[in-house]
Image 1 (tube, chains in turn purple, brown, green):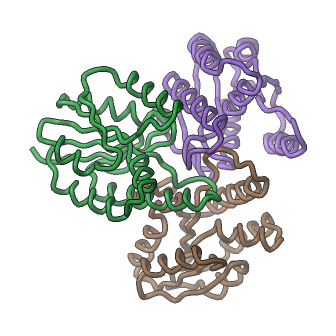
Image 2 (tube, helix red, strand yellow):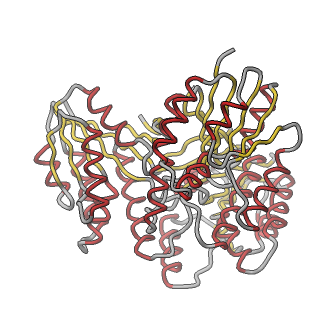
Image 3 (cartoon, helix red, strand yellow):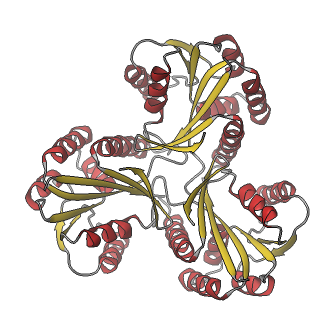
Length: 171
Length: 171
Length: 171
């Protein structure tokens, strides 16, 4: 076996995570979940708990708020599907930690071409809508948009999810 | 005849209402318009008036800012098409009135499975773009997104409209 | 030869400009670039410089922050492809200059039907996401959305770009 990567984009509560979980279950592979989110406050903790409940059992969970590439190297292998939820939170964590997002993104894409196993990357579509007044938000939007383009370029399949329905963009 | 439901999603000024009105006219059925919007200020009154003008004649108009399910039960029947414009305003009205949005959404979806006649639900795609800083806006986004997924799951057809052009997601 | 017009919509960093540039190069026609953006501050200057670098050589560049129609009349002709990047910045410039945006939009669409040559209009999808609290931003969203609908109606092809991948909406 070789590597298979899928990018799943969608808005908040678009059903993108549920779609990714369904694809994972249907793959029949050993399921690994890589969470990039961190519970900084009660609202975030509630969101994470809700996601975990929706996901159900049968997953091995890993946390990778910053060290996503290292985590993928350790977890990914033939016979496994690795669901990363989500790339935008990873970008946001990198920015808050003062890391170089463009370098980290390039590193992720480079590693994606070498890895073995099956990967599903969930991410938020944040580039549409009015230009944010906050400079940090504009930079975040730029970083996320560039990362989406780079991952989409090397991915085997790309989906856009709205109202729980997937629209195939590539593959 | 039985029930036929269509969900039409799109951004502000995407042409989603015009598309729904066109589908209604083409159905040849008796046309009913259910407005969920309320004119709280001049800007909103202007938007409502503009929509009414665009819509033209040949419609029986109903207002249902909160009691949408009761209105659909009263208005919907074989031989009629009921255009609901729009679901996001309904969610917003429910929140402002302190109603339980998840319960009201579930009730709408349950009733949708029992109703007879043809229904078109127009709604705003609000889940994409930067996460709003305002907690109320985040809750609104979550409620709207979940409602869209639920309605899409029971709908016969789902469209995403951009620049006046419909993209079929389901049906 | 006659006129061929393409509308390319997408979010920030969606890859819409790169896609438009690729279509321009593939056309084999003489390439003209019409920039509507103005460098008011360092951030904008940086964005413009980055775009110019991405674009590469082989372009004749024109600036049209306000007088877009006059520029198109002067530049467009058989044997040439004219890339306008982007319509939303033009709308924003018109608003800041106190111009009548609806009149200017109607004039652009009218001229589009008379012009000869090939045209690519890049624009930002700004109508999705939470309703902005700022009234000016809501007006901008309305103007941009109406302009997109009007241009899409007369365009030969319309694309929606996400993560660098084009989705054909018309043509």
